[in-house]
Image 1 (cartoon, rainbow, N blue to C red):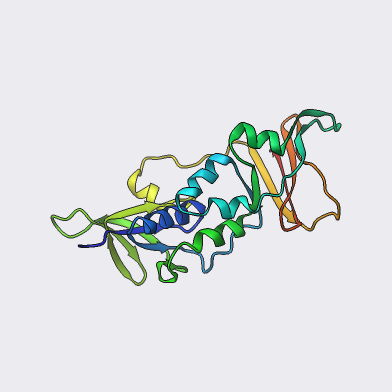
Image 2 (image 1 turned 90 degrees about the horizontal axis):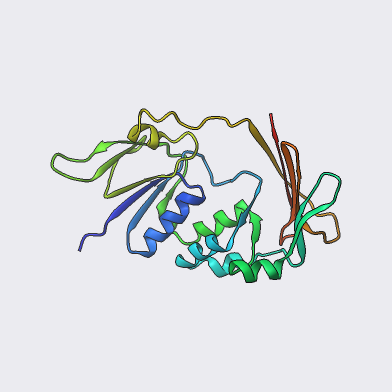
Length: 224
């Protein structure tokens, strides 16, 4: 019996999740990443209960839930500090079926990578989808600097400037700037607990959230 071969272009969260799921289903998987290493942006990411249930499918849901750091009240405030809405972590878990987990992107990438064989991931390998395979076949061809790879399935997970999208949909206008800019930072902790919260103002917001490892994930967004 021939094993189906999938090529995933891009090793972000989406690409690694798809690759891990296919590997668990018995596919041979090759992940091609343009960057020289899997060092994600220095930012956090929030995983709601529905995303955790998706990770349950590939056996990583409980590992992610163990990193939950929100154990108390939180909510949204005005720039003057008045609470607009408050909720507890327990109430949110009861309503939505689980906790909100906020963790560093690198922690999630490491978990996803752990579900793949070492040989499956190829960094420093730009790739592009160039067309069908041999005459009469249905396999796709992915071109790399090391040679062409034929695959039964190609997943384009290569980000905002996707070359796969440009190949499949050459008339697609691509992403356009909405006028809303976001800044993100991960900083050391402040030495005492505080409520996870967002502050909403006119055309701007700020969020501060504690992580399990003691650091703080903060972000600001504004029309610009």
